[in-house]
Length: 225
Length: 264
Image (cartoon, rainbow over all chains, first blue to last red):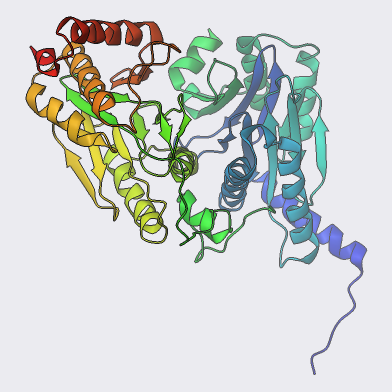
């Protein structure tokens, strides 16, 4: 017969949280913000092919920080969930809140029952229309879900970046200004990030069903002016 | 549906059809024979800058079930899918194809090649046609963005996929449409000539095949005409289609109803 040792749940939770936070802090942060006509997501990412920001559905996007293999698997699950739901019901029934809740349930479950918590923080962004609002749902490694009103910051350095960004953002601005603010918040006062290391994506209406656009280096440079 | 997570060994990858099957989303197969709306004529003609497609709008059961269904749809920006056979399965098939191509693109950040799309559909058609009497016979045409050329793929009832260098037709009006195409096709057709030939071929099919709807001047309903080229999938506006069919129709009236004159 095996022996079971008593572990204080408070200690266990603390240890797991610390472990997850450490893992997340190793990666770079992401800022997502609502601007006048859409949602912009910005990541510092030297790789042009291993993306941190992805299209999920017509009006939904995903962003993840932390361990790439872990959030990429969640992204794939998100795409499958959205495509499967839209196929079963209707495209307009695919809702960010439902998806964010599933992510939160899963992350919460792994945090308390898994071998180790996932070292990720994710964002589900939704571009609003006449039936749904524009939303930024941030889901933490332990399954905490927050509905961020104007902007969301993911990653280890979140509090500092949040402070920098909050100082610049009080009302909705055009894309170019919001993008500048996002990049300034990520880089901080001492650093400039080369355009080639910026991954920027937007959700914006352009008269087509799909609204996700991945901005290339030229488009980013042009917007930065 | 909960969050669809898979272990690395069971992961269906970017294949939506496989995922839908594993998640129990795809429609159940039936072996019972039921009479359902069917029949079609859809034509695809290659021209020097792409592909032109023309399709009638009628769904036929024992009676005319619908006069305005769309049998050609954009599967993505550079690809069109047309259907014949069971309308129910055909429309489902278009939906599945559109979704699968987009799913692949979102999962991998790259688009499937045109040939990849055609091959992908083969087993889906085979699976459908060999397990139910509700057969569906699609036609895939598109602009191949990597080889800069318009391409047409047709399928047989068992899912076999064949590329056509000239033109292809599907549906019950095929004998009449194909005859017109065989007489009128040249390898150096320009866009205007391809549109004209496609319209003529469809007119002949509508004229002789009871299950193919020709131009309906009473209701102002006309066949669909689509161009797929470097600029992507574009539908020809209804007024332009109407004018084209009106010309063909007037010519037929003037010739005293004799068909032979239309190609000259």
